[in-house]
Length: 213
Image (cartoon, rainbow, N blue to C red; front, side):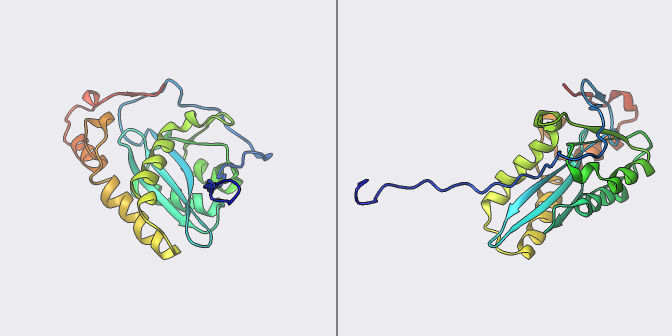
C-alpha cells in the first residue's frame, strides 16, 4: 500500500493564534486568584477565538459575567484588532451598566493591552486583571465558553461566508447559550433564568457563592 501511495495522509488541523503578548504595552496583575463572588457585575472575563470559513478566518470577541456565566457582550470581525475587543466591551457596558470596581479579566494580548482598550476600562472604573503569560488556566471561564461554542455550534455547521457567521453566532449566544443551556455551577439553570431568579432573592447574602481557584 505504501509503494502504491494508498496510505491515508492525516490532514493538518488549521489553527490560528489569537493571543499576541509580545508587546511593550503595560500589563496588569492577576486579581482573580482566590476571589469569591456573590453577585453579578463583580467579574467579567474576555477572550477571542477564530472561526474558519471557506476563504479566511473570522474572529469573535466575547465577554462573560462569571457569576451567572452569561455572555454579555460580543463582536464579530474579519480583523483581530482592538476595534473587535472594544465593540464587545461596549456592548457589555451598554447591556450591564457595571458599577465602579468591577474586575475585567483577560489575557495579555495586544488587543486587551492596547491604549484605547485600557483607556475605555479606566473611564468606566474597572479593575484591570490579566492572566499570567502563557497560562490559559488563568482565564478558564472564557476558555470553557469558547470550547462550548466550538463543540455545540461551530463544529456542527459549515460556515461558508461572513454572513453565515453573523447569523449563527448571535443566535447561539442569545437563544441557545444564554437562554437554554444548563450550567451545573448555577444550579443547572441557563444564565438568563439564573439572573432572573437572583432578582427575586430578598437577601443578596443568600446568593450562591462562587470561589475562583
